[in-house]
Structures are given as C-alpha cells and as structure tokens.
Length: 262
Image (cartoon, rainbow, N blue to C red; front, side, top):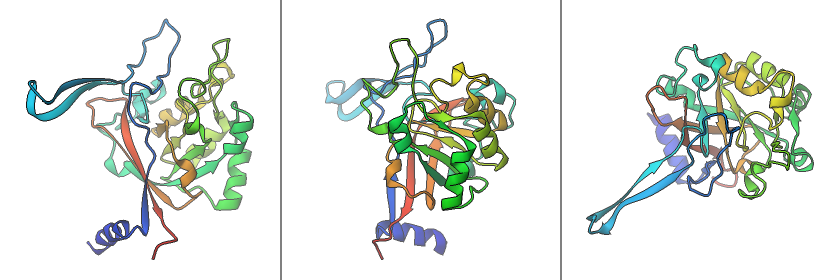
C-alpha cells in the first residue's frame, strides 16, 4: 500500500503533475465525415433534462448522444475488420491493465507545421530512439504534431478543395516496426490515427489495418502533448465499458514527474 499512498502524496504535493490530454466533448468539435455512401458517426449532442426548475427543482442533468469514435477517443481492435476476431477485442473485454501505460512522445511538430502530410517512418522513429532510448513493450507511442492548436472549423480536419484530407500519420513500415516491439498502441492529436492521404497509398490505412489487426489500440484527438517529456510520463486512457463496443470517448490523463517540486 505504501507505493500507492506515495503516489497520491506526490500528486497532492504536485511532485507529480496531472495533465489533461482530452478535448472537451461539445457540439463544436468536428466529426470525421466519410463519403456519403457510408454510415456516419454521430457528433456530440446534449439535451437538458432539468436544471433546478419545474422539470426537477433540486437537480441538474443532461441526456447526450455521441458516436463511439468522436472527440478524444479509443480504438479497440474490433473497430477494424482486421481485428474483428481478436481475443478481448472490444472495450468491455480488454484487460483494464492495458489502460495504463508509459508513453513515448515522438515530437514531429516542426515537421507537421511545415508539411501537414508528414509521414512518420522507421528512420524518424529510430532517430528518436537514438536520442531518447528504445521504445519498450507495452508502452504507448504517440505522435506529437501540435495539431490540437488548430482551429476546429478551418484547419483541424484540413480538407482541400478536392475533398482530400491533409493530416500526418505513420506508414506501413513504421507500424510494423512498432508492432514488433509489442507496443500497447499508437496515439495522435489528429482525428485519424492514419495519415489523411493514406487511403490513396498502395497499402491503405496501415495504422488501422495493422495495429487493430495485431490486437493493439488507438488514441485519437489528444491535446497538450507539448507538456509531456519524450519519455517518463504515464498515460491513463480508460474507455467507457460499452457492451461489445468498438471504441469510446474517454478522459485521457498523463502523470508527469515535476522536477521543480520536492
């Protein structure tokens, strides 16, 4: 028990900082829109039930509707056809120990600012490892792009006049490299773990196809990654326990040692 109590004490003392990596669920947040022939994820909608009034004098509450893959959200293996037969592949069956893991924050914010179609490749990952240390098994690999700072209405989804989405993401070889390292999964700040143009590649949507097929997880629409070190933070990313759920909005928090506190 002393280890756990030490953790709580250090959080209270702010020796460990708690950082929110989650966007607020709101009707202003953009949803990923697929071609019209496909089904669409529900955006967030909120309806007030009562607020200390004739509908309920002493209480305030709301009903809300939202798709599993909206806002800051979790991808379970079952989200993709390649992962449909994975054991414990839905959010209600995944072992809860997998919702806590150390994070490797790969900073490509400069590259993504210069090129929104930046592709994370093995060479970039290995250069990061040479500087910060090896990516270990059962850890998160998260691409920092500073995308969360973009305007939701103008630049976040970043669709051009031809309907093409320009957002960064990993290529096939990068995902294969991470899977060999047995990572927990891959996270990003954009609305899709795959690059926006990856549906045009010879091997389409490699992150979804390979990560989910390998029984790994995805985190999308993260924020505040610029407040995390390259290594040393711990991520808590626990989805709602939806029966047979393919994913879920969630509150993602990071624990970071505060070197300025005793």
